[in-house]
Image (tube, rainbow, N blue to C red):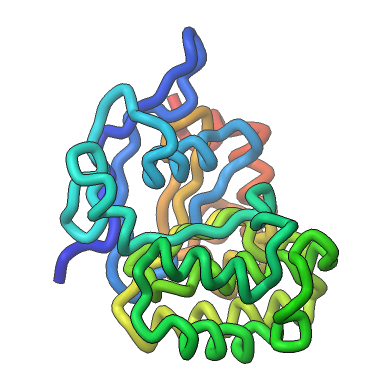
Length: 247
């Protein structure tokens, strides 16, 4: 089966500052991959290059076998995205937002799909409310519903549960896992919540200074590197990457 996402030799620099330094990795169908690292490690820059928002200085990105550089529209048609720092238009209602994005993605049976998402994300009571007046947690749920509207082959989630209460965050994680297991989609997931990462991700990549420092099963990695928890390992990556063998 074609890889959901394939990245080879990806690099992006801003003047003398190298944000992403020649990284290569893949996301397979039915897999949730965590992209981890401290602020400034290169996570968001990587996601923005996958989305075609930024052009890489070097390297290639393929989504379901389609090259983003040469066929951006085709590649992104099977992709979607949610992040707390990209709120939906606040002057549109929940249903209006979902309809606009559904039309952009040319979703078939759109009205039915919108109703499914309103139920799935517990948004029916807010359907005719403008997104700008919703709480941050409610807006996050709308953003996640938008991200699922086209049943994307590649789902990019940047801190997707950051503004949700623990119970809602758990429900969202469960829903995304079910979406992945029931189809062929792959997910690239960034988070600073290591409990969430360990619960959700099949595999994680630790970025440090734009390079992939570690890769593996989040449940096994801490012990493999002499740490008790994934959070302890994360802190080491953030503060003392040299102790983990990075030259």
